[in-house]
Image (cartoon, rainbow, N blue to C red; front, side, top):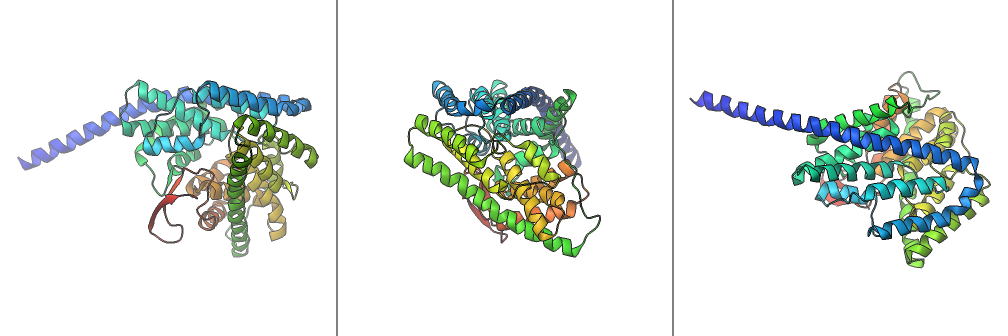
Length: 422
């Protein structure tokens, strides 16, 4: 009799798990298709406006006016206090409601910023697009509070994957970045499905996934190279703190001296124009994917990584919309390329290491950073990628691009700290 009860309980447990699996199988596919299509459209739109900006230099002069349009759109929608990607993190952790209006607003605003030469990325918009759309679908199908958190992570995974073509990184990043040290593995199946579909839709449309061929990757473990890579990891950790402090400091300075958001964004646009002409080139306008590609080939200006930090802080601090991760790729790749020559590493290999190390330092996401290397470069230099990410994570302190990110455990000891990244 006792044995029959145990079998019955096991059967009920299996039945419950099977129902949840089928439910998330369906929802993961729905989110993957919906967010993937939106992400694909967003990617194609960004490519087009980037081409237009590069063909027409005068568009930069419209950046201050574009800023006013962005502020006007958010004010008209009643979302003038929008917190960007930070709100997505809070929504997953605390189940705060996301407005579907955020999706078209971030789509249009990021397009405007890229078209007119603001120094921003695209992944912040992808995370917000995916999170908001998925969260709204969750409410429409009456998911409970815990399931809404999972479906929001699915949307984040699909949006990130559709833009970069890195589905595994997208899944782990969505699960890792919210609360460092706590990963909700209950979300892994729907997140993987959504990310694979998002990446698959982009590939079906002819959008090639991001990938780079690095020169000079060591074929085997070399302890001298390990030391050089460790030093580069230390440099990435320090630079990631500089990046985060600059982003935070410039944003606070804007709010202190230009409290009116209309004046602030207009002035910020004027500053970007002035910086562009002072730099003597257009390398730091937009995301800078072409400069990242050059760094991967071993070519970078010594000052490029510092200038990109300044341009990005001035743009995003003023209120323009976009992401911080692609600028961090730019900063890390160009820094690595320059530092690699000094350390005796191949500049191309060091650029790849620098991209991963800085991404890890500013997002506090070591697992996602390591997997990003595998998806971008292949697994050939995996031990070195892991080393640079580990050192950057440990030594970058408790800084981060997202003020709402929680770091649950000390980076130095196995103890609970439960405090903000800053």
